[in-house]
Amino acid sequence: MTKIPTGMNINHLNRLACWLVLILVAAQTRGAEARLEVIQLHSRALQGNPLHDPATRLVPVFLPSQATNGARLPIVYYLPGYGNSTEGFIADSNVWLKFTQKIADEVTPVIIVMADGKTRWGGSQYLNSPAQGNYEDYVCAGLLPAIRAVDSVRFGWGWLVKNNLMA
Image (tube, rainbow, N blue to C red; front, side):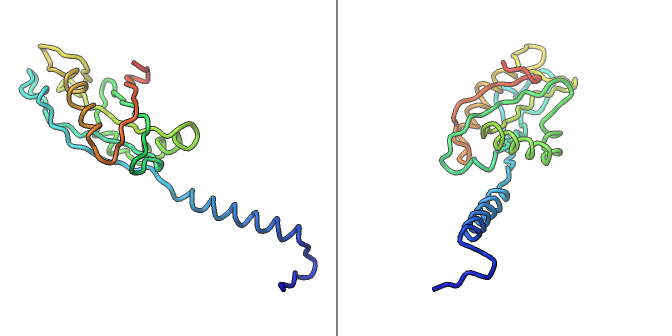
């Protein structure tokens, strides 16, 4: 039979055991971090565009720690506004990884995908234009199916977000 240390009773030991369990659980969940996958997407819709902008684009996919194999999470497609490109988001990925995980921990886990619609003029284009290229086709017929095909991302349902407004 185990002897209880002097000055402690069974209630003290129960409380101590509860605290130890809570500390262990917290230590296991604190190590979970978001991750970044960068997809190189070649778009037939952007080939030969009038501005000679690249048809191959980098697409950052920010996945929360809850995005495990088989998890079906909602996807937010973010369309950066004027002057932004996905290269800047990849360069500042630590900020976006923290943001992705914070949303996952405090609201709901979501996957954030960023489309690159940057043109040679520095703006962002997300519609088809005979003057600039078929950017709507790039997003709708190229980017969305490509993300659905990525093994580590199980397509749930998604939103398009442009300039911080849902569209």
